[in-house]
Length: 382
Image 1 (cartoon, helix red, strand yellow):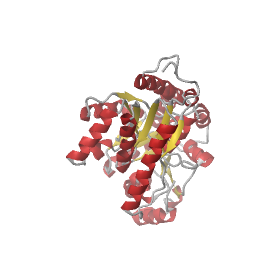
Image 2 (cartoon, rainbow, N blue to C red):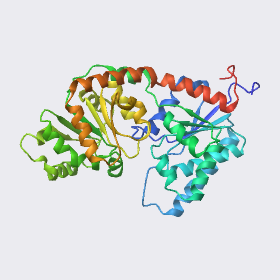
Image 3 (tube, rainbow, N blue to C red):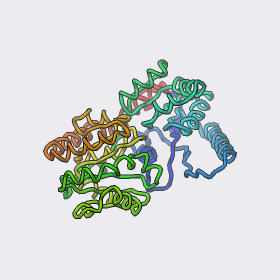
Image 4 (cartoon, rainbow, N blue to C red):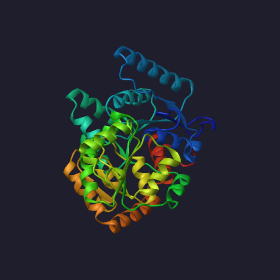
């Protein structure tokens, strides 16, 4: 290691990097990491495994494509050597695909950091058959280090793969984004914000189907409340469905806005205007959206999935409800809309926590330590 030339890249990052704007948290995380001091110090480069979703693709085409990506990965390792491979993964098919990168790198004698971003790991693992569960355990154990986004998920990985070497690496915001999000906005203290992902299946996964039946009743109970549903794949259809749920009453319909996908400044304005983020998600683990909302000083109502309870201090910065619990979702929204002072206190707490614990500087420091441990690098090299 000490004789390694200074031009030799240390880290190959395997993850999705589509053209911006980025819609997924993993995609944004890849881009942020590639612009850090750590990326420069490690001469990090990316092996881009992004492919647009197309459910109509035949299975043979998917197999041929994946085989081609694996061959490209092996050529990359052979012709452009690195010291360590960092693989980002979620669950489902994506986990199996990325497990092959992990195992190929290990077969070539390279240390691997496997970073898990999904909030569905437990469901994914426990709903699989014995052979698939064995493959998941084999992958977790084969990795030199497994990085989870919270302590609770680290404990879960240990419970299913006791020999896995697990560390906690949260997501983080960079300094410029954090500074922009902390700038004061025209806060509407009773405005509730839902942000979808611009695709009907992902909007459903984000909990839209649970929110729509609940919203009219909560809005009726709190006549001062305003609601913004943005990032919707079909705003007109959502509006029509809300009307069927009882949104046609005088004075009620005018307090609910349905919008399409929002990015950049438009998204930041909505975050700064709103006081409560509602995120009854079925898929999120450590969502960047929740980090952004916390940075602006919002409280939140989320599902109890993934790292979200840890992020919100188990009730200190927001309320959690089990997935699909519509009565619990109603109660949580009702509770916060009934107590603006509590919402403000939660928002203040969230801003402080993000600035202290969830910045990109924190992520870089923890990743650097993990890279050193996984690859056996000394401080003089990294």
